[in-house]
Structure formats: structure tokens, C-alpha cells
Image (tube, rainbow, N blue to C red; front, side):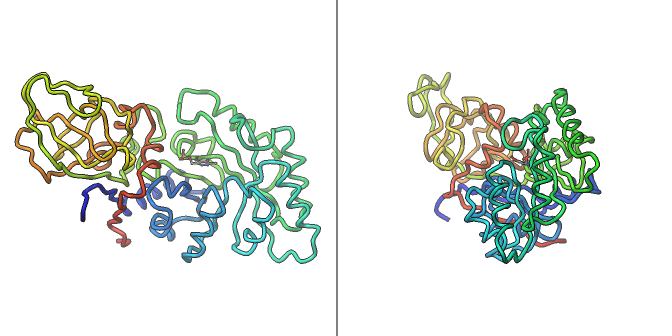
Length: 368
Ligand SMILES: Cc1ncc(COP(=O)(O)O)c(C=O)c1O
């Protein structure tokens, strides 16, 4: 291997985390959210690792769904934003994809399709209700009539299902989630149909959001959805460990400025470690001095600016460190949440930003 930067993906941990979701809400079907290349973990390998356990998968676009189908993934697949153009409906039918319908244009396209002669296969539709996110979905007072229209569509599998999405569920003290859940439950209360509310935060923190189908995302990847926590506190296991190595040790003198802009100046003679990891790999460029990095399993502060291929660490705590020593940027031993907090971002973004040039290595693929 030419460069040590790599993302090691623990497939057992993935399965463990999905099992956690299923154990919390055993009556629900679990649809792991694997959009955005499974939050940077690799769409297909993640789907394959979870295929036996997952009741279905949720993705953001038909391209992701077709990649899964072409690779032989047979689980139900839900397009979380539905279709963007009516010409996607042919593939949606052919490849048995389920869709979210969130605006009237999609509803009309399904009505048009239903008027055509040969409806080969009815499409499973989740009608999205906007209960407070104000992003996608029919307003609460429009939902019943949209649902009625869908019930008259021969192209739609009956009855249409109902879903909503929580805006503030990561904050367990925010009353908005309870309000959203109550609003959602007030929509078509008599309708006998499946409902879905919960993302990871709903599953782990909002019992009233437990319905017929759950959509766990970030918790699958081992991260707590709640502010100020780590996944370990929720008995989740980290899935991605971003690893690299020390590629140089510089013995700097007092007053030497380290890296671009010379933003960090050595307060004394000291060893500086250079790690093969930079913003070209997806490590956040704005991670400040002091962001923790594990060198040989010991927390070591990042110093100076992150550059494209490298970053520097203060090795005063481990003067014996040498070129080739193991570095962990996040994952096993260093929660992604901790790094995200230091870099003023969220673990979702850290994972999604890991660059294509960083090889993903999948370990523990077999089911024991
Ligand atoms: C509609 C919907 N459901 C579920 C999820 C999963 O959310 P989380 O990763 O917070 O569990 C997402 C993610 O953005 C989503 O958009």
C-alpha cells in the first residue's frame, strides 16, 4: 500500500447497531438509511452486510437504488424523496422501488400513470406529512385529501402509507418532537395503514415516535444522535475507524512555526509528528489546534493548520513515537462525536466527507 490513510469499516459493528435499533422497537420494520454512500461507509458493502437483517433500505435517489438492484440486493428499497421527474416511474415499477410522495406534482404524475392502460405493478407509496420540519411534505390540513387521491390511483399499492420526519429529535428537552408526533397522529386517525416517524433519535429517545417502520441512520454507524453524547453511551459500536500513520518526526526548536501560515509556534524544543491525513482525504481543514488524534492509542493534540495530505501532532507526550506508528483520526478509541465537536461539525459530515481516495477496508464480514 502506498499511503497509509484508510477507513476500516467493521461490519459486525454495523449489524450490532441495527440489532440495537430492532431491540428498542421490536414491533417495527427496520429500514436502514444508506443514502450518501451509506454516510460515507460504502453503499453496497453496507447493504450487503445488513441485507439479512434489514426489512428494507432507504436511499435518496433512484441512482443509489439502481446500484443496489444491479448488485442483486432484493430487499425493499424506499426513495426518501420519491422521484424527481415522472420519467423515473418506469424504473420505479420495473425495479420494485417504494417511494415517498411529498408534493402535488408527484401526486399528479401518479394519477396520470394510473390513467394509462397497463399498470403492471402497483407502487408502494409513503405519503409524507409535514408536521413541523417545513422542508418536505404535505401540510397537515392537506394530508387527508392527498391520501384520498392516492387511494384512487390504480398505480399505487393500497392503502398508501403515512410518514413524517422529526426536526429536533436530537434534543431530548425540545418539546417540538412531541408536538410533531401528536400532529402526525391526528392525521387520518381511523385509517388502517402503516406509519413511520422515527429516525435514530426517534428510535432511541422518543418512545411515542415508535410506529410500524423505523428509519435508523446515524446510529447504525455507531454515533449517538443526541447532543453531547457518544454512541458508546447508547451501547452502539463505532463502525468507521479512520486510520493512518506517522510519516515523519520533526525535531523542532523553540519558536519554530509549524505548517501553512505558521499558526502554531513551538513553545519549546519538541518532537512534531506528521500524519498522512489531510483535507484531501476529507479530514476537516478547520479542525483547530488541540483536536484529539490517537497516536499509538494515546490522545495527542493536532497542531497548526490541516493541509491537503498531512496534519501535524504535538508529540511531547510520546517522545518515543516513530515513523510508521499507528494513528487513528476517529473511530475505535476516539469517538467521531468528540472530533466533530472539536471541529465544530457533526459526525454525519465527517463520515460523508471521507474522500474517494481513502480506501475502505471491510472487516468481519461474515455473520458469526
Ligand atoms: C427522511 C429521513 N429519515 C431518516 C433519516 C435518518 O436520520 P438519522 O441519520 O438522524 O437517523 C434521514 C436522514 O437524513 C431522513 O432524511
